[in-house]
Image (tube, rainbow, N blue to C red; front, side, top):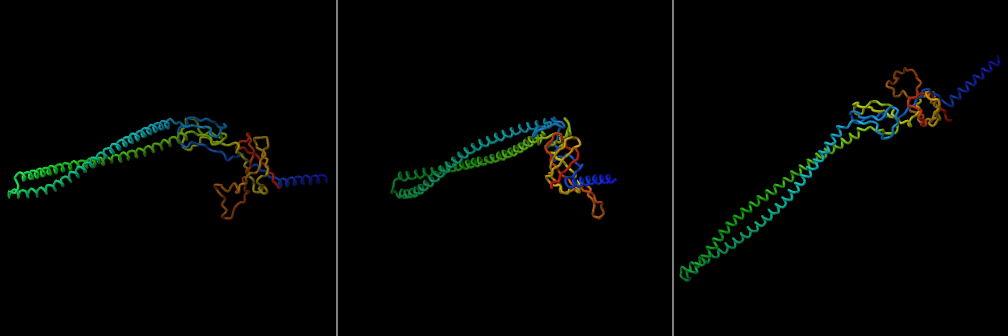
Amino acid sequence: MKKIVLALIVVITIIFGWFMYEKNNYVTSEAVFVATDSLTNLGFKIGGKIENMTKEAGDEVKKDELLAKLETKTLKANFKEIEYKIKSQIHSIIDISLNKEKLKNELDINQNIAKNNLLEMDNKINSLSYQIKANESKLSKLQFDKDKFYKLYSSKKVSFDKYQTIETEYKYLQNMILSQKENLNALKIQKNNLDKNLALIQNEYKELSILDEKIETLNNQLNSLKEVKKSILIKLDDSNLSAPFDGIIAKKFVNNDMVVKKGSFIYSLVNPKDIYIKVLLSEKKLKGVKIGDKAVIKLDALNDEIEGKVEKIMPVSASTFSLVPRDIASGEFTKLDQRFIVKIKIPYNPKVRIGMSGEVKIYKNP
């Protein structure tokens, strides 16, 4: 009897010692899941009909590898139409610019000719005006001489021939002045016509401003067409869906010939090298667990044990962000054992799949 009691005491002591060892040296949890932060849902930036899908669920992909493509017949047709419009617009601008340059050259030449003609006409008018004044001065002197000789002739101090000579010269000069004044009036009329011609030429310069406005309008339209072209190129680029990183297709949401909206999920992509073990650890077991602690994971789907290290311990409990938080305002509540997320980093293992579950043993470092 004593031996049995002694044996029971030894067994109880061993069990208690093992329990204390386990409590002090490591903790366990069965709330273990394989998780990742790289699971990414991929979609097109534009809507359209799917022309080709290149991958299936489970396929490996490389970064920038083409995964799916939208039908682009309409976009390509629009692109060609815009390119032709741009070329036409450029030729129109060139044509109007050449016409403007030609018109400007012609106007400059005609304006210079008109100004030279006006300058020449002003010189003629001024010259003739001075000649008239000189002749009028001379006529005034002849008038005096004519009156003088007339008196002398009347008193028979000079012959009639001498008087007639002066009178003839006077009448000739008088007629010459009248003729010069008529010519001067004619020159002034010509100058007035030349002024009008110059004004017309200068008015035609307004046509250059009109052409400038046309060129500016065409350039604005050209810039708008270029923006449309740029937009189409972006859409053509967005019609290709490529892998943002190396990974594995986790899910395929659609198939060929389906019409999808902008942002609709096409594939779900995961990086198999960015996998970790997510552990929900009771707050009672959290004491003593630190970053860097060794962890041994046993997944239900695998026979092998996997070693890892504690990488993160979340600062809040898993229930903190619950959609229906606990109401403790009244002071009446049931105390629950909270769980905290512990992230364990493991080496890459192609057998490990996201969503697998199992159990973990975390060894506490002293």
